[in-house]
Structure formats: structure tokens, C-alpha cells
Image (tube, helix red, strand yellow):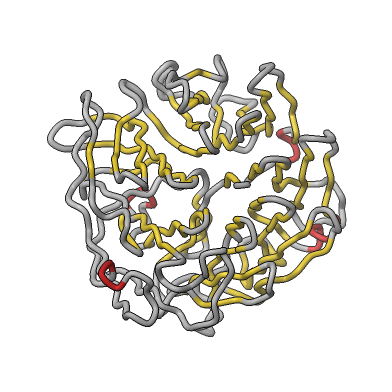
Length: 410
């Protein structure tokens, strides 16, 4: 099982929309680990990799950091990441190379077993990269110019990119699995407020509009069975945007009635669980994070009255999220990352001290985070944390009791 998530950041009272396209330029210091909290004490130092060369000219690049408890996704300080996606032992991402010559954003793959990086595309403008198992999705305007974006798909087993949309005003934020892709599509040129939420069957090319533009669908997520999103319900009792999910097996769409009591921003979904975060009033803290069990309809409030909580990244029995629980304030940053174990009810602080690390993805045993050092979102560095090597979970994926151990890179 796995899940694919829409991404956005909330900073300084404003929302930055779209898929986060953070890059990687900050320095990395010693992780500050000890034998007591690291399974592999010899790998306790996090090393910033050298600037990444372009691996697309018929070659491959090998690194030696993938076995570390924590490492930084390599990129030169002047370059930019254009969406980063973690699935199993692979990281797929877009990267714009600016020096010594400008190379528009291309698609790259980093194999975390071999620690080999390779470039997968040429002559494209890759943005908003997401992945699911062997399937990779992104937006690209190399076929239509700056005024539009189309959805592209790459089957890693086949190796040939396929254009899924054409002649549109613009399509954005593609999240899919091996059978479907979901994205938003402009209904009017350059009007980002008018977007349908579209479900596309990869086998038949048949489309279905899950939410029309007048419902103002925003963030969405995809799992093996479900599509979840936020949108206006039209109910006068609703405070703003509510949460919906669509069952890809039964074809039934469900509105989660309890979400009408607040303004819900974003959703994630994996297995039988989905999560949403929101607030009572639009863009006003405090925020809440709720975990919802789809088969029973039961909900659990994981975080409430919080200044930093964002997505609840779900994989299997784990949920990772940000919180100001340990700072006691209502300011987004500094904050901490916390993980909740659905099976045991245990929760644990991940970070040793509060800072700028933001949970961006979870696929056991790795947690993907971004260090929020700049309001320019694509200039922020990505890191990957091995939860087992840090002693945060056991090898079965269950939380171990303990204090925060991950040191925020400076």
C-alpha cells in the first residue's frame, strides 16, 4: 500500500499553493546521534553530498550516502527541485540545473538501494512530480508553451513518457496509482479559481469529473482504492471546504459530514485511513488534524489547538505530522515532527529540538522532510530519515518509546 499527496505550505499567515518544488542547498551538520539511539553507529554523521552533476548525458551517477540514517537529496546550490516523490526504495524528482549551462527541469530517479541517480527525460520542463510504484506523473509545458501545462506519465518498466492530456488551458497536480490519475484542470484560461477535479482511467482514457469547478476543489490524494479531496459542499451550514472520498472499486463518492464544522485544507489517504487538517475559520489558527477510518466512519483527533499542524502523512500504521505541542506557541515555525502509531496509539516526538523541518512524505522505513529555510519553496533542502536506524520504530514499523532524536540541520 501507499499513497500520493497534494502538497502546499502555510507560512506567515498565507498559503502557498501547488505542488511543493523545493530544492536542496543548505549545509548539513553532524546529526548528533549516539550509540543508544542509532542502530548503525558508524553511520551517525549526516554528510552533505557534493553538488549533483547532470546524470542525463548517457551516464549514471553513484553516491555513497544512501545507507546513512539521514541524508540530503543532492543538488547544486544554484539549482532547483521541481517536486520530489518517495516510493519504496526510489526517489523521483524534477531538477532544474543552472550551472554551468541552463538545463530546464528534467526527471530524475535516485535508487536508494544502489545509490545510483539517473536522468529519465530530455528536452522537457518537468514540474509537480509524483509517483506510485512503477508509475510517475508530472506536469510539463514543453508541448504547449508557457500558457498551459499538460499531464505526462512514465511507466518505469516501459521507459517511454506518455502525454495524457492535450489542448487544455492547464492541468495541475497529478496524483495517481497504476490504474488512475487525478488532477485539476482549468475551465477558463489563466483563472486558477476555476478548476475541475478530474479522474482519468489509464487503461481506457475515460474521464470522470469528481468535483466541478464551481465546488472549488483544492487538495487531493490518491491511494490504491480511494481518491480524497476538499471542496465546497454547497451546504449553508458548511464553514468552507469539506472532505470527500471516492471509492475506485464501488464508484461511490462520500461526503464526510463532520468536516462541514470547519474549513478543511488538505487530505491524505492510505489503506483504510484518511486524514485532513483544517481550522474553524479560513487561514486562522489554531489548526486541527483528524484521522478517519473509512470502513467504520470513526474519527480520531490527533492534534488540536495547534499552530503548525499540516498534512498527516500516512503509511501503513504510521502518521507523521508537524506540531507546536512542544513549543507551546501558535507560530508555524519553529515546530516539531511527531509520529502516531495507529495500531498501538503511541505517539512520539521525532525531532530533538524545534526547528524548520516539515514532514513531506512517509514510506516506511523512511520519512521525507524539507528544511524550511526560505519562503522561496523550491530553494529548501530535502532530507530522508530512516526511522529504524534512528531507533524511532522497530523493524516491523511500530513506534518505540523514546524522546526526539533527529537534529534539525543548520
